[in-house]
Length: 216
Image (cartoon, rainbow, N blue to C red; front, top):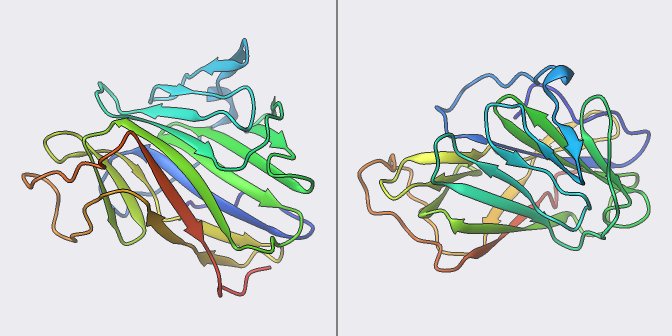
């Protein structure tokens, strides 16, 4: 879980995901300084972070992240997002109304990746958010302990998604569950040197849910 929460809400909840380069578990995640934030260029941005990244000009478009040196790269699109434009703040790229009134998609660049936050002014009726992942440049996926790893052909995790979290209006933080809608490795055994489980398609559905967590 990142070391800070995704903003303060007067009401509602915020879901946070962190996508970053593959690294050992237990690493400390400190937010990067605002000075390293990419500047928008023609509706996208050129990243000055350590990882190659692409930035959408509307909430319904995917953002992208690539592993240093390639060849693994992913695209991430928020399912159901509206084609609303975004604006940069000192810290992140924000899309008000991304999922309708009272919602906001926030993409925060970091030195080690991108933090994706979906904020709700009021707790949603359905405690679930879906993403469509472009995994056409990924050899295999692995899901263990709510962490998703994107593997190269040799089984090395080149990119990863940290366990997602949910934050209530009172600052209460809880874990969120993760499901993948494509073929993936679920073995707790380290992936290096093992057969890679290909996703079987160029796109994969990622579902994050927090039903029963009591966060509001």
